[in-house]
Image (tube, rainbow, N blue to C red):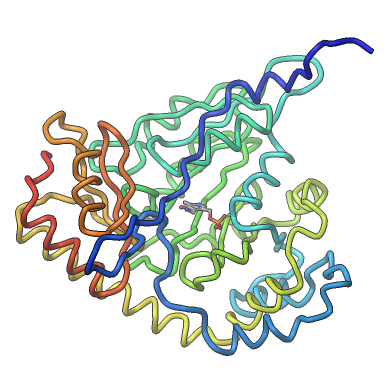
Length: 368
Ligand code: PMP
């Protein structure tokens, strides 16, 4: 025996830290609301809870092929179920896609993965874990992707580009035209991943249609999730969509049994009740519109949001994102502060949104 300590892979030492949204601390006399993780405030549909409870044979492994769920997704979207690869959340789906296409080859340099920044906090972590090199590219001033800068960041080492529409945490969505124009500038051997975690909340005319996009472009992968519109974040179900050129590789990189039998039953059932799901989404979009209108009335300038959150931009140097978050906390609201950048606030229950607007009325406006 020797006394040498275990050494992790070098990528582990370089990992940025993922900060999950915190629950609000209790405040006397106030109901607490969590607005820090872009969750759905509605409880699961009763039929979905029944479907979960019916999956009692958990002494057995789930279906590794998730045949029922992929069939339900295929029917709902009008796609070939073979194009669907399921995962533990869209985060799991992203990891699978990266594992298939980007990493450190035994000989040679690490592959590069280009993405807009700020965007979803997990991107640089997943890329680093895959063994690839994260290449963050600054957003445009309005929080949207800067497509010129993204195209300019592509090198011969680029294997994957991550696009996020609507972008977490800033909110803007892309048009189909914008993404088509971008794809025309990207080499066809680069995989372009379009993360559509918030697709159901988009109300933008001409918005990018991920299904059409992947069907027309063999190098495109689309990520979707049951965590947001379907409100099943705790169950961890998501998937990627890709055509015949890529799906075999993603399937080969997929984690076996990543989707539990309960998660598969819940997600499949939720898709069968899409009208109820979308009615709730409509309510949340109305709440979003109320919040955005309220903020504008107060003089705040917020990027156009097509997701279930709003972004308060604190990048101007005046005001302080952490201070705003502390003021929210004192009112039993947890929000997500990005120091020196901004504050992301999820659209929640009507009472939570109203309290957030009241806070904004009292609190100094974010600069812009
Ligand atoms: N993509 C984006 C843009 C997100 O905001 C999130 C969740 N915050 C995810 C992916 C991951 O969600 P999940 O793994 O729950 O599907």
